[in-house]
Image (cartoon, rainbow, N blue to C red; front, side, top):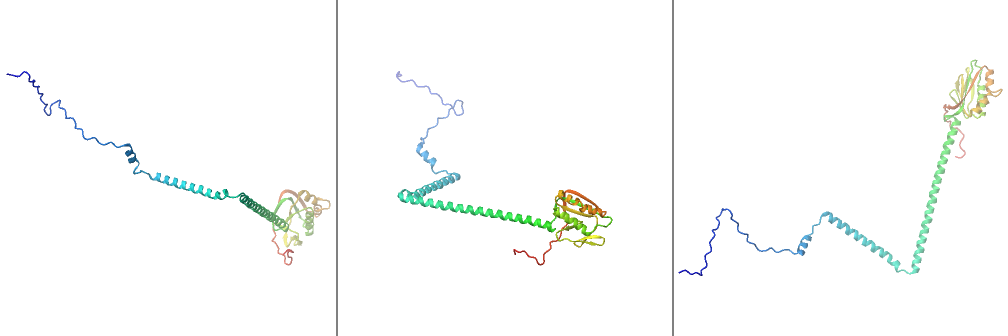
Length: 276
């Protein structure tokens, strides 16, 4: 006889076979939980060991040296001013007087050096002026002595003597008239005429300082044309005298006359400078 109180058996569901559709893998079995790091440990791990680049190291070293230098400078200034802070009023006055005296001496020395500089500049200017005057004087004397070429306004006097009647004395008179009228440089047929020049008759012509010249006689004269030409044309003067000898005389003014015939400088045999 069956017992009615026995629970009915649950129907057994067959397990799906491997490879059949709808098979599910078994759920993973959880392992033991990993311990989590605290914030302090993470901070320490990020800062140590330090990761410093080469550029950062150089900048840090420069900043250190700069700070050290500033500290030394501040300390030095403090040490140098310390005695003055503790000095008495009389000492401060004495130090101030010494500084004033030193300043005055430096100002005097500066003024003395300025005076020396001005004196040297003045001496240099005077020497330059003396040199310039010497050069100018040498040029003037060279023109008078015939050792230097010259140019300037003047006249050209040309005497044509077809009859051969003009003599050396007449040319000398012409030269004297030109000098009296202010002639500064004279050249006759390529011969430079100076204070010591002499004229002589030679073989149908005229000789100047031993050099024979032939007609036409051409005078190149540097001077003021307004004075030279009238001096030759005065009544009884050079032009009229030459025309009486049947010579032809032509006077031409010019703004530029070149006297380029030169004479060698002659060394005196006996005369010496009185300053030597």
